[in-house]
Image 1 (cartoon, rainbow, N blue to C red):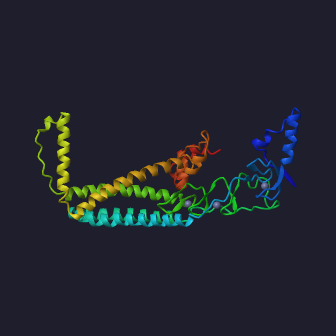
Image 2 (image 1 turned 90 degrees about the horizontal axis):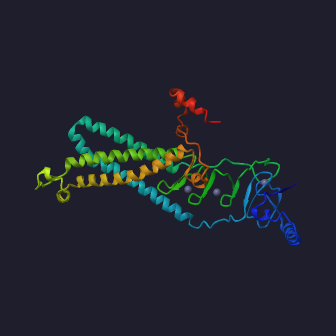
Length: 357
Ligand SMILES: [Zn+2]
Ligand SMILES: [Zn+2]
Ligand SMILES: [Zn+2]
């Protein structure tokens, strides 16, 4: 059984001969067409030798002649880099937790025992949720694509491999929802991106854990920055600065600038007398604010993709008008809260259901 592949732009341009010259061109083109075998179903196809990409008329599999197997010699280095990043992130988190407990707890327990227990509980909840979601995002498989029959004509039905391409690294079919990650060395279903900080891809199986980790980490950085600022105020040495000008004269720009400059210098002079505990508090504050800002931007970006029903990679590949449906239901489905939404917010849920079809 023969099936003709979809014509490429190069072969389609030679199909309307009117004079002798174009007739010769037409004949040459037909002679150049040659037989090849579809990788998806094994049927023979007649395609132009100039067509770099063609689609099987039976199973719908796409063949890309230009897709060559890339040299994967840096795979081991990428894995080593990922492992180093994961160890670094884990050590950083442990330092924030242990350093925070060592530096902050004497201050909060000196205020009251209840205040100390309250902060211990918050620290325990945030630490467990951040570390466990990080572990799940890091060590869960990002999502193995389902197995599909391929390679022989009777087994592969009409359109059975519609828009599948062939992954030359894994030697198996790859759907349009699947991408090959050269750092993980595998095909990943609904791949969002490869994150070196978790040493893993973010895909269908661990995307939720990754976003829960981001939410947890952002909440932790907000908490650490607030509590370390509060504790630093308690242990800060006295600032020896007396304003030379009365406050009602601060309206002048130069006087205000001078006042701010002298205050900053006085603060820096007093910082020299900070205890080691105070210096750790200052470091915790600066580190948690800067990491928190970066993670908040990443979390916002991730949630906006989920809201649009897309991943980072599908957003990159989508054309201008190919935007997904923007709906809060995408977020509810993503976090698996359909039952709660349908039970406690039935009016909201039913009104949104009209979008489904
Ligand atoms: Zn085929
Ligand atoms: Zn692959
Ligand atoms: Zn990866």
